[in-house]
Amino acid sequence: MFNHEEDLPLFFSLIRAGDVERVKELIAIGHNVNAAFEDGRTPLISAAHHGHFEIVKLLVEAGADVNAVDAEQNSPLFSAAYRGFQNIVQYLTPITDLKLQETVQQQLEEI
Image 1 (cartoon, rainbow, N blue to C red):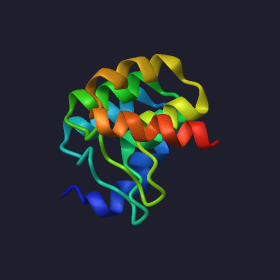
Image 2 (cartoon, rainbow, N blue to C red):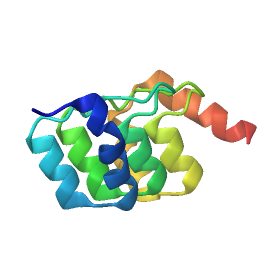
Image 3 (cartoon, one colour):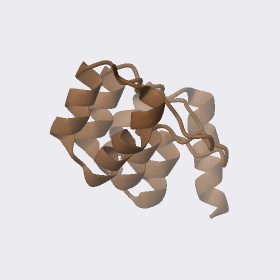
């Protein structure tokens, strides 16, 4: 049986490593793409932070919440913008809530 809580570190490790095929496999067997650590960090925030565009697309297509924020108010869009991953920013911007887009802009201006 698949245990999301036990396998969450594996899922995040594969995302950080950019292992598209293994991430695809976990999604296919039903891994929760919106599962989060206690700090609120989601798979999509992690993929955006590490610049893994293909994984970002996979997660979004599988229903990942593009408007999720972690405990520090970091969103997938902010993570990608802060790290300079323009391809991810261009992909996420049109599907991110307008209010969150404004928040991201403010966050970036404060840096």
